[in-house]
Length: 198
Image (cartoon, rainbow, N blue to C red; front, side, top):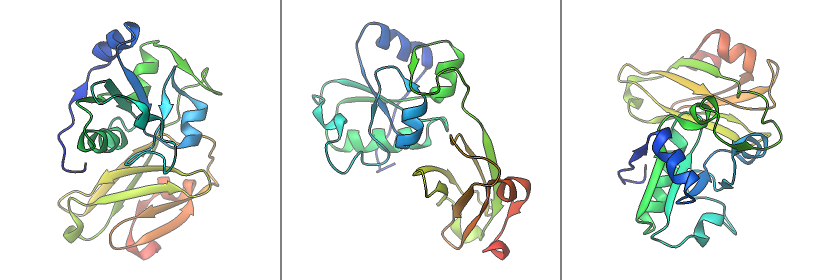
């Protein structure tokens, strides 16, 4: 998280700020996820550093209250928030329970797919215990969707993610510090991913 401490904002507090037009909302997920379902009024500025050019978050004054969010519920959003804090923004929060909780509470959303809940998938795997504390990533290279998680002390990991526009046959990539596996979603979610699959 760029070495910065990021405060988490409960959904109720974030919604109060939102209703009072007292915050800027930043979606830290992939562009395709933002296009499908987002908090109404949110700009797309992906984790960890935002867009390479014309990042909308760069337009905010440093004293503007900023709320970042993702669906994990806050792995990507804390990465984006940490970078904003490091860049001098004074009041930055990550939405504690993510966009799914926002949707469950009936708060305003926008996008191409507002009538549908975000799907939830889970991949479990194992790598070397030497990689404990490092990140594992699940990626859809075609759409740019990605989700990180942290490797446990015993080398195990669990990645819960909410990708859109994928099905059981969609090839995804699982990247750990010690191996990379590319396989269909069906395969990755039905077994424990190990280096032997690489």
